[in-house]
Image (tube, rainbow over all chains, first blue to last red; front, side, top):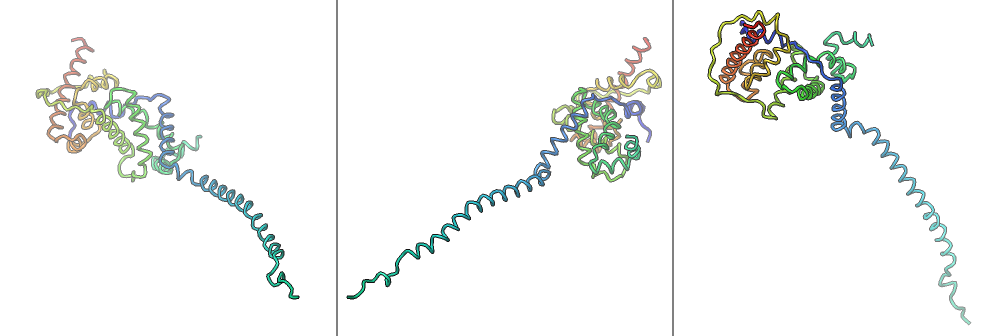
Length: 98
Length: 188
């Protein structure tokens, strides 16, 4: 179908027209893309770091608990036999018959 | 650098690199199309700063949806459609799309526009289009982008007959404006 002369004129002249954007337009595009990436993929992209931090936290907590818990265990283990020795058995302290 | 530029001379390679999120390809693509796409946006939104903003949003859409381009039809045509949609969205959000139904019908007269090709520059024609009142969007979509009346009706939520009558009015008004410009240029 033949184009209308007005349509043809404007289409020919303007279809491939160019207007150069300002220099900062590309920087704007880049910064908006970075913001979007951070917003969308924040947790996903931080995954490895979060995993490493979780492991460190787990190991640290484990070490602190282990360090505080072990001496207590060893003390009770030593005390129990000592007290059992010191307490005299009923038959040992029974008065002798005269 | 030369090697990088050579890699993207083929459009298919450029699309593949964009699909992988290659930042060098994105820069190359921007440098190649930005000026043309800004001109598209300026045709819909007169304000160049706002048009630039819409162009940036359009580029973000292209990078986001590049996987949807299946190589059917021209890549530039696909990009241009995304840009046009972005401009229409902006117009809708600002309620800029006005459809003028009060202007009486104008009869188009046969005219010769050969003089325009040698006399008027792109800027002159852009300025003329900018002066179109409510018909600008429809004229842009139909005459320059090549949308059908059915597509325009769907995009702008109007009837096909409204789209047709608006286009007719736009042509008549453009013809009048061109005649005025001609008389000024040649001082009739």
